[in-house]
Every structure is written in structure tokens, then in C-alpha cells.
Length: 162
Image (tube, rainbow, N blue to C red):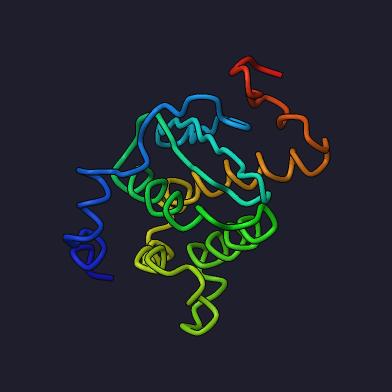
């Protein structure tokens, strides 16, 4: 794999000018994710809209270019999705970066996140790319199991830990 194909202008724009990297006020839920092998850490927050879709998504934290770009790309993709759709997209992304799914038609729902498909050829970086997606999936799956309560380890509307 040519690493320059990953670190293109579009990818680097997500690193240098992330649209979704900010502290959200009054999120519906928040969940922390850590990649101990690389030192990446992020806190992902969503606010659910009245119709149950993800109305706003944001993250804070630090990490390598891949984890930060992946979080920004994912955030953009998730706004307007139902939690169920978001979980499906997270699963699809994780299978893509592990090299389990490569079919263009099957990856089409990932939109711009498809630019990270070549991560599958960089095993040491897969966890970097997956961090935000895994964090969101864990948060949303935790919400499903707890009804309207925040995910375990997440924060509720008051921003306090559950």
C-alpha cells in the first residue's frame, strides 16, 4: 500500500481542521475510548434529536492523525442516523479496516470513511482507526440495554458519570 494514498489532502483536512472536535454542551450521552497501544484517547458525545436520530456528534481528546481523522469523518457520517443505523455503520467500518469487507458496493454506505479502507494493510494502525467507531458503538449499545439511561461509564445530560 502506498501510504501517500491515505495521507491525501482530504484526509489531512480532517486532521488539521476537524469540524466535530469540540466539547458538546448538554449531550444525551458521552463515552470515553482509549487505545492503549498508541496512546489515543477520546471522549465521544451525541445529542439525540426529538425523532431519536443523532442530531449532533462531537469528540474531544488527542491521538495520532488516523484516530483524529477517523473520529471527524465518523461524526459527520452519523448526524441524522438512528442509533441502529449508526451501530450498523460502526460494524461495517470495523470489518472494513480489518480487511473482512472490501466490496465497493457493500462499503458505499460508509461514504467518505471508505478512504480509510487501506488501513487494513497497516495492522498496527487498525485500532487507531477503529477507536471512535468502537467508542460510539459501545455507547449506543449501552443505551439500548439501559433504555434511556446513559451508557455505563458515560455521562448523562448533566455531564456527570453514571
